[in-house]
Length: 597
Image 1 (cartoon, helix red, strand yellow):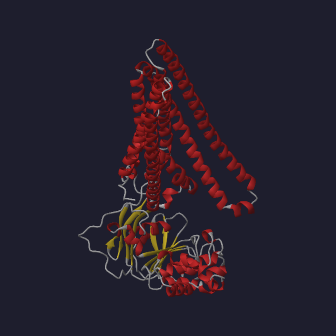
Image 2 (cartoon, helix red, strand yellow):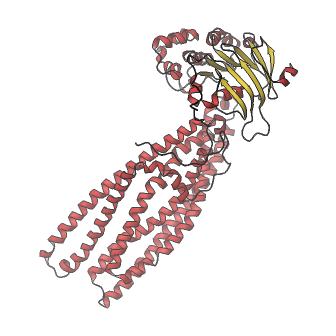
Image 3 (cartoon, rainbow, N blue to C red):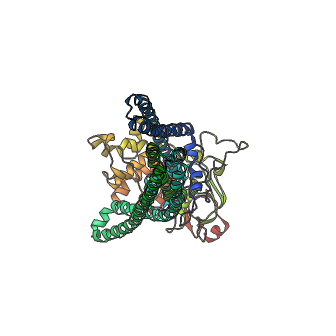
């Protein structure tokens, strides 16, 4: 697939949450936003439209032969006159069938490529958004947006234009043919078109609201199910199955009511259109009978007109249904736009006047008057933070929960940008470097030992896919993981299960340590590495932790006194400021922090 043009999307501030309610979009506005992903295959779209129009033209021409056969063959009983129009009809049918098949395939091809491109683009955007900014969506809801909502958008942006053009052209072709056959009967038929269009507009507005409610409820139910299933051990241990069942049932009823509202609207719209179509057909038959009695129209002409009408009425009905479907799909567009407006980390373009990082990177860190407030928060988490950390220094950061300890790591990784001040890596302002370049020199060991559903080897090499078997073995040995891995039946090829469910907490932590050791970055961020472990497991990873931090500039976020005792420098973070607690003066802090110390 060709590389798509960027989706034009007004972004919120980096890390900002989107509005609590979807931005209202009209179908044309939603179409303009997502059209760039279709336009890369515009040639295929145009060819498919041409083929489907050719198919409609073949059908219209074949219908005209019905009148000829009736008046020239059936009425006089002239068999000799049958063969030429019959051969022409057969040829038109074959050409129309071939054009319809090819056009349908190309339409499906472009639609599937649009789905792939939009899902890739949306997932790529989600990977750039700070995780905290996505928390309000819920994992299940995001999955719903990446699947069902994307398919609904496809029906508006990729399929609808082809259907609209081919249906409109078909309506024009059959309408013109009907008008040519009998303009009086055609006027009777066209009189119902405004009624169909007005009904489509009314039902479209109602269906859009109903679909929006259904998609929202579907997302909430998916998030609720995902959360409940993920926490099933806790649910069972506390005997809360009935409570969870009631929650799922309540949200399921909300989803059911939203779905029933859609069904009611669809149930009314379809029969109403058929009723109007029946009135039109009866009016045409009555007017046609009068014209035949007055010798203004032949029986063959009436049959041809009836055939044209049989094709025209569904086309008019399809145009109305497209309007309803477009309004319904717009609700899904609004949900995707809500995600796309959740701003990613701002990517600053590298400036040519600033030299690149010198290799090898030493890992010197500096925080100069750094302040930060989370989007929408009333007060800053950090303010006036000054740190100057020499390469290879192990810095322990302590403080109460919510004081901003983890925020320091997020700022260093450029998950967020400082509200004020600068952060330097080897003297370079990291805001002037590409995000990937900054993160390439930093290893993060999270409090939760996150593992993917793969083998032990795949999880260890996750941060360095090109590592050799010898390097994997060395990292696992240094992390004190090789011993238990070697006892497993499949060794390093043993599946760890979803989120490492086949391993114990201590084993998962050692796999995460091996992964961090294999990624030889000069800067290391350890976020509560012993949290959640019993004394024996925590003591067991102390030696691997010392190996991991050796020679690296380490920011150790912890409450564990056993870890702070090994630090070169201990800092206490409270009320947004840093206070030097212990260690040589390898860092400077704010003047206020000095006074507090």
